[in-house]
Length: 433
Image (tube, rainbow, N blue to C red; front, side, top):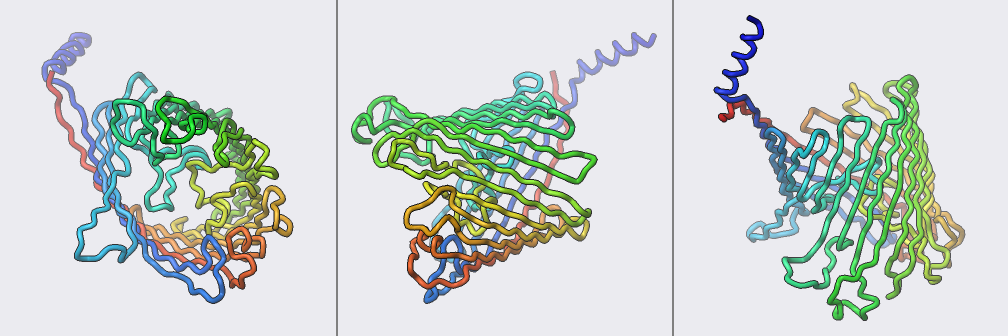
């Protein structure tokens, strides 16, 4: 009798159809940020005055989920207050993300379209959220995530300026014509996670054919970056350890020649939570430089798509380390108050070049102090205030084009408001046979 009831219920379900759910989320963001720059990114000459401006990022988008399909489209506008007249029509809204994600097999998905990539500590791929435009990539991304213990992603991208009928030279908007990437993460134990990541960039070789004007065929040179991360976060002890390293190889254009590339980037840091509201952290970063860039081998590390603002000081003096490389010894303290809705952070950086540089007196590049206060009012309203100081020296002035000039204490102040409300709509319907 029980079996008959089960079969009867199954038959009625087949006749009536089955229930499915549609989810639609509308979201937006308004982020004005006021800045006073008085030595930001480079020393300021004493006779000059600092600059003040307000920059705003505005985003609006929608995310739609149905059965095994998810889609998202986000538009954004970035502008400095007053950069266009109030009575002119100067549209600047652009597409930030537009992708579709769908299931292929259990645990296996494909994501295609313009999308953000974010992995590990965001050294190689990150959203670059500090930037008003952010990072996004037009690509096909394949994802294997059967469970949280083991994940594999692989992506491919091919760039062109427009639809073409024959091979032409790509006028570089991205820093590559072709890109392939992979990422793999594995939980070795409940406390230890290992990950590996890599990217291959291919660009058109115009050197051997005598310039861009002669380029008529597919001839490429490749540049690779591979790396990995070790993360130790014990559940029974308030300590976190992280080590990561990256190595670059292949070819790179230098002074109208294709040189070999051999560079690296290594990082190690640790943090300890003394109290629920008090943590300290310390670390060291080494970005390789080049003692002899004219020998046909380039050893200066090339930063790609990471969140450069979040590392090596937020005053952005060393987002591009070039041939000199960089050493960064840093330590910080973090206070989290008001049930961790409010945080106060102070970070000290001591900078040096990685290799000796001609015309510099030693390797020292001064010190930086960063102070950041964040407050989360609720899930959609956040405030942030920052104050940074850079103690420069003559080496910094030489590298930043102010050699012999009289400069004053470099300072930078900013304040931002981030409003990102969202509304979710859930629709339940019956799908007919």
